Image 1 (cartoon, rainbow, N blue to C red):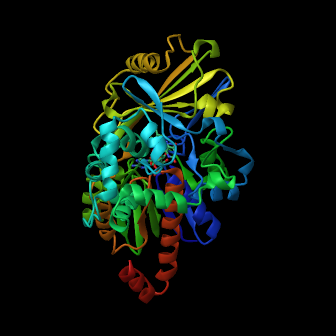
Image 2: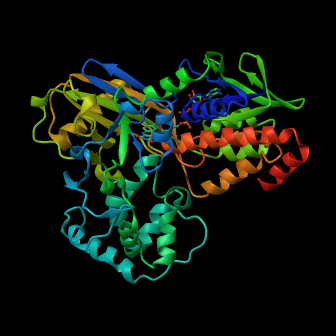
Image 3: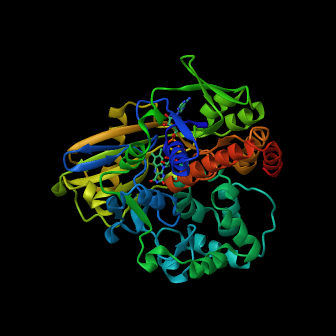
Length: 474
Ligand SMILES: Cc1cc2nc3c(=O)[nH]c(=O)nc-3n(C[C@H](O)[C@H](O)[C@H](O)COP(=O)(O)OP(=O)(O)OC[C@H]3O[C@@H](n4cnc5c(N)ncnc54)[C@H](O)[C@@H]3O)c2cc1C
């Protein structure tokens, strides 16, 4: 039977292998550098707590994750975000401000809650309303998100509202983030509605929001998201899974490919799904597709850390409201956000009040500091914002060096160049967080699509004219 090598055993790679398994038309071998599979999805069970080391939930609106969970038969593990874990706050001027209701893409769509919010100065609110009269923006091509939105609604709205809400997903810097790759709807609103605020209001009215139909916005798994790669591995043949197998290169070999491992072993395959972070993908492809490698090397990454701290309930003064809070860049804290796990995912926090803090973003790596130093700063931030001064019952730091690809201006063009560089190799496909979305559903979708494309190209291989045609179409 034909064999496909899947490079990288994160969610994108495992989803690709699952797609191949479901098709029944080929075998796969998943080559993973680490000792375990799942990449960023790792959960640690502690007495009374589930600690998520990387992601803690996924968006339901994008169906790929829920579909896969159903296919794996673990849907009874799905847990929706609780009602008490919805709505968050922004820390500014030394206090927490509830995010005004009615936001869409970080923009206000309801006048009164926006005008009443203490988050912005009166001048900034009036400046934002100027967007209603600014007219169409026909600027072509990609734009840095922060300056683009600031031109329309003013800098303070960007700093205190748009930036914390929209850049958090990417741990990005709004001054450099690609609007086209992250929130292309904003470009459309300015073009079509002539006003971001008016356009956001129209979008909100039109949107069929899952919450309004009884479906939650976010979901997680009862025993932690780490269960998802575990279930995937259990659903794949053992011999397909090869941990501790870092890939060094992919070379052409006869009619197919030789995947060269760091220890010199070679694995033959007729197709290859590359599900690696961009720098690793660039390394392994630099001989066979130098143009692709060059484009991939230019995708920057941000290093992050997650701090999990649990406190005794009596040590937390005052009620914690909503899902947590976000921290604008200029607020003077180390943490960029804090999730009240106890409210959002109470099943993970039965042993006390579990808080999860995020550290690091583009150009602000926290990783030069020791765990002790990071915990000290996180505790100081929690004391300032929430008044928690007590010793935590549990405190852990999880480090993610180069953990998040940065979709900076020009990202869609870089990805197109990377894919273009493989035009002569329709049986090699790229997928994962570096390309078309960083969320769990995004990388699952990409992994499955990449595997389906490789299988399609393998089928065409029997008929050379079809392979030529597919190469031309791509
Ligand atoms: C702290 C944090 C919080 C997040 N929170 C959320 C969230 O709440 N919701 C959400 O939807 N998303 C979240 N994300 C994003 C999401 O988790 C990731 O984008 C996604 O899991 C990436 O999957 P991937 O398969 O593309 O890459 P990875 O998970 O990075 O997998 C790539 C794999 O390739 C392996 N590898 C590297 N080099 C080689 C090599 N040479 N040979 C073989 N294998 C190699 C790695 O060991 C790794 O296992 C978060 C990410 C982080 C870092």
